[in-house]
Length: 409
Ligand SMILES: C[S@@+](CC[C@H](N)C(=O)[O-])C[C@H]1O[C@@H](n2cnc3c(N)ncnc32)[C@H](O)[C@@H]1O
Image (cartoon, rainbow, N blue to C red; front, side, top):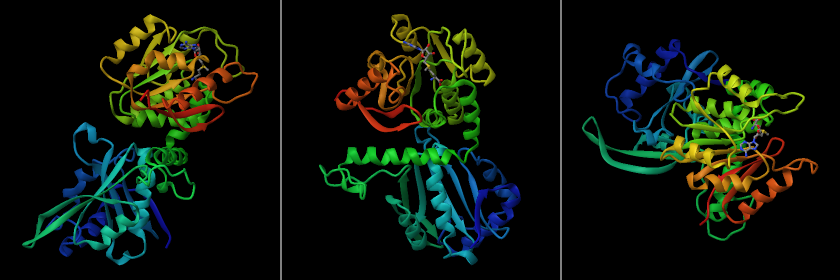
């Protein structure tokens, strides 16, 4: 079947409601007891947005034959990353993998939407839907016995869930990492292995999003980093809990990528950028006054208000005081480290403020031996990985190490 999945538009609403209403009398799918109307559902439809809580339709030969929507799971902030999904398929097209295609699309797209867990609420007697979700990796996370009354019959509700990206189930401890079966390895290794793969996957997903071309322009104008690294910085800034600290902002390439992530997260995260200024000779990005050009670039990209710029060197007492003052009681959920070669020094300066699992992007890990920053930078990172303070999740672009903070145990 020729099937496309696309964002729904209001003109699709009659077909969406028709598919929905057809399920009401079955008492299998929805807890709604009466059919609804387009007018009654207009507000609900408009509460969706393609960037965070999308509404997709599955279309075949110009006809809407199924739909899937995301909605906020619970209103409290801590549940922001969790979305509830609902899937409906036209009764004439069931058994042709339409629901599976929609659900698979949701699982794949979730990380780039900033969604870290998906849940579905399904009646206990709706075996086809339970099977579909479980086939695609959902697990039974909750069972609510007899909570729905359908024509006088008490029905159970099952909550199915899946983390995005999927987490490995703990396997027997002490097994070596096996490429064939990540679920056979001990949990921390398995988690890192899985997370590395899902970061690559997330990167691929962003290639199909408008932010990809937005960041391509930012890279060309303002950054020494590779586009993939800017995309990951954007992604981490969007999903991290806690604030963001960047050391070595230069002309603002990574700063702007992180600021876009904060903007698209819809949260009030602080983004602190440290830069002492100076001049640089460079064919593409040469400048006589780093700070002047940095401030101009942030203003041009309309992110000045998101960024707290601290003018100074990372390790100066005044800079450290200013960072602490800006953070207040908050933690750092993303560190972007692209200053000089003293990576360990900068980590030591701010490690008491790193959140557990703080994302870390550290440049100058690979490069030509003639580059004097590389050898000491890599030695610092390797020693911290060896000590268990840092967890490696991969290497991106020209020379950037990506991972997470584990800290002294
Ligand atoms: C390679 S550039 C950063 C490039 C930037 N991340 C990008 O996206 O293009 C390094 C910057 O770090 C700054 N820097 C060097 N030592 C520093 C320190 N101790 N604290 C803060 N910034 C520092 C330099 O002035 C320079 O602007």
